[in-house]
Length: 407
Image 1 (cartoon, rainbow, N blue to C red):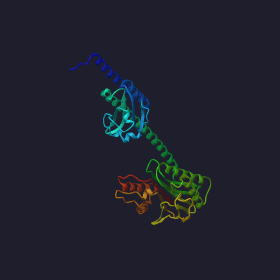
Image 2: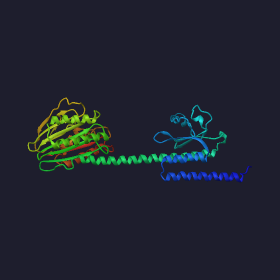
Image 3: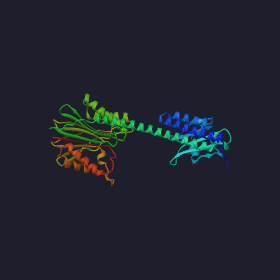
């Protein structure tokens, strides 16, 4: 039996002390939230000065594989090597031979993984022969690489969380700004009773309705829906809505001229990638005359008694073509107690668990049944019917209803 000499015991104790000191140094650096670059410097110092590795390369995965540490090796580092060859290493392995020019320059591969997923690979060499390599040094190097890899991964997740939080706050702000674009107050008086309700599919949506007074007796009533979803669709609609309000603030326009100008605006803004379906009506409460254009939108429902009229006259959607081929202006006179309901396709295309759509006919029946009520109450009932219809499913599109009753 061989006994350790005093010098050997002192050497082992010194080695353990150095390792504990190294672990403490890295742990303190992580707890102090030092940049990952600082962690890599500490890691490199320990490998070189304390473990006597003269040459080493660290591959690590963040968003993708990269090489943040390269010491003592002047050759080209091929990131593709990770996918091509390193994935096969599941444990610390001495490199006997390799066709890879990179692997052949190192003596061992130290893999780092978590739940079977590779996080890093450390390629190392020392001065001297492979037989002189200390197995304990391998294990400690693997421990250090593991700590570094987890720290880097946690740092990446924290950054992702911060980015998500920032995006969430920006979307929340955008949502609040979008709500400000909708009319804050809708009239309910002896002339008319108006109510609108809107549920965006995401934080911000692409549906829009508006009510713009033009003096005491004339009003603009409109609703629109932009193709596609997401922030770009919402921004296009916000720009479109702001333009409409600006145009009507300073000047009156012929309906056909206005629609042609709006088509040019959408073509310029969307560059042919999106289009807007839009319904625009001009109503004179004194003469009870309404003129309108339906630019490819769902046909609004006009209910007088039990008679239902769908407002179809108009043109194709805005932004579909550079020039509108034809525009037909709808004209009608509204009888007292007429109910007028505008909606987007999120209402009628809402599906139940059987894949059946809510549909226009079902919407008409609900309007007929509840039109004697105040428009706000009727809208609330219709949306409760939509909730019952979809059941546990989510809304798959922005959903808007704008209801008007003219006394």
